Amino acid sequence: MSDQAFYTGLQQNLSTLREQGLFKPERVLASRQGAEVVADDGRTLINMCANNYLGLSGDPETQKAAAAALEKYGYGLSSVRFICGTQTVHKELERALSDFLGTEDTILYAAAFDANGGVFEPLFDENDAIISDALNHASIIDGIRLCKAARYRYANNDMADLEKQLLAATDAGKRHKIIVTDGVFSMDGTIAQLDKICDLADKYGALTMIDESHASGFMGKTGRGTHEHCGVMGRIDIITGTLGKALGGAMGGFTSGRKEVIETLRQKSRPYLFSNSLAPMIAGASLSVLDRISKSTELRDRLHENTAYFRKEIERIGFTIKSGTHPVVPVMLFDAPVAQKFAARMFELGVLLSGFFYPVVPMGQARVRVQLSAAHTREQLDKVLAAFEQAGRELGIIK
Ligand SMILES: *Cc1c(COP(=O)(O)O)cnc(C)c1O
Image (cartoon, rainbow, N blue to C red):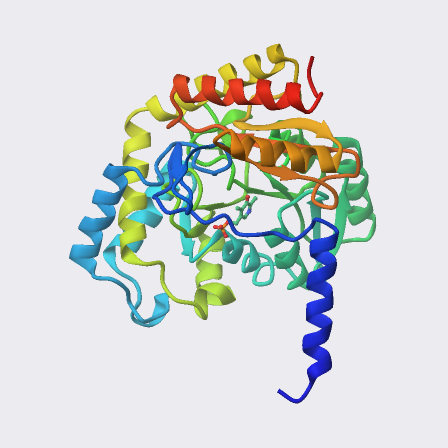
């Protein structure tokens, strides 16, 4: 407590963030997660900013499965996996995830952040090259930093630039090359062009890795993910993803792929070796989620119906969106203060959504991001659209 300058510096930085409008306050909910939530002031809001794509966060059936696993396996393990922290429910979930994704084996982590943080360093070294999309998630960027491999970056979703980087890595004589991309980019709802990426990987003898955090459970005809959506199941070497979004929404992550890859990670991946086992109730609930969405595509179908409806109606009202098919719908407002005012007005009108502006998105690309869920009813979506129309008129965004 003798270095007062340290604390003064932090106070100044925090003030600067507040002045620049970049301070991130926490929104406190007094209810469970869902299509509707209760704010801590008691108001009910329609929630349009959760990653609750299949509506399984707060879902009673998922909760029941968690309760059953809690009853059978207890609260926690006080151990990492390899000492005394592996239960049958963890092995069953790893098997079920492999079957769901179409891979040989899967390893669980406490979060996708850990899966990405622990995937590169055990598999690649200074002789290798990692070729990464410029908009990849922070956890991929951090994971790559922890590894000695040479780094190559290609412009977001730009296949010509990817090929240029593959050529550069080949010319540099790199032993192994791996192309790494988010399956879906969460700011724009853009879907990676995995068919072209796999073709380029074949051409240059490269491996492929996708992060399926915004895709597992609902992209593709049966919800397997972006690899199913793009018709490249069986052509992706490594898949990482989260249990904290569509697949139940509590927490947890995974890496999936060939058995020698997963076996190596079990021996060497630091977040796996030095961090606690996934709580058994999360593993049990995730198993029930996978079982449910493997038997029926009802939730996935409802999500895509809601998405198509919202995308069509919001454009009809007169708003500009980034076109696409993903349940992430960026409603473009372009100007940062307008986006802030708009989100605040929507909050008053009973709709929870988040505004994004520079530096989170490029300058002049300010927006509010809507995320659809299978849990939204048509009535709720119509209320949200009416609020968009009202706020849009008031702020002069639409006529
Ligand atoms: C959310 C997200 C993560 C982190 O997931 P957690 O399980 O919450 O750590 C990683 N990658 C991508 C692409 C994400 O969207």
